[in-house]
Image (cartoon, rainbow, N blue to C red; front, side, top):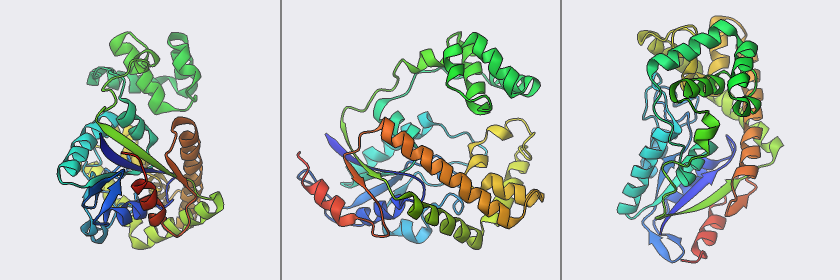
Length: 329
């Protein structure tokens, strides 16, 4: 079986720095097999968008020059990135890394992507554009509570696990019902794609102290603003407007994942004059912390890591190297 190292953890926990430090090693050993360094493969749903290198904390050009990096900035912001699409790209890059004699190192905090890769996806058929548009229009017409009630009447199992204001997932559940006649919960019980049997996943979970992580969130976002995050979001607005997606009310705009990247909604509010820059920063730091908490909750309930590290400013490279070297073939 071919080894794949996975580094997962909450945002700002040091995953990217750790992945790069390992990828730079010219003689990585995993269970008796030696690799000529590693290839870092993005496993973050927001870092796939090329218009947001600063606010999604993508590796810099200097960092990417130190070791191969893949799937960073590969999609335009006006396209819809999905777990299925990422999975296909990731499997190609994993195979390419192995062919080059390098260890694939998946780095990111998007648990859905990891689950899609390791377990496969439900084989839900493509939903016609007209059905998707009708579902969004119905949400706009009914509002959150009435839409949720209507979904509850048709698909109580799915509705019961979705928040009343979870627009994206409720609309998705409705459009699947309309297009296929089956609930999304039914589809999700049928594994699709399957787990790649030839791959051996080694999962390292970074589980930092929450106070340490909160300080990192604040420092990182303040650095992003200093590096041009506001200008980046302003440019994103112009780019989307050029593609007919300017403003939240434009058809399809509210569903664009790029507009939900941490810090983007807050800085858009600042650019509209709805809040000060200081308020935007405070709100972004708070929201990022809440998201990090959800990431850890998911990790504790959905994965069984091979190794857990309480991260500090030290990237723990030596600990991981020793752990990998001692693994059984």
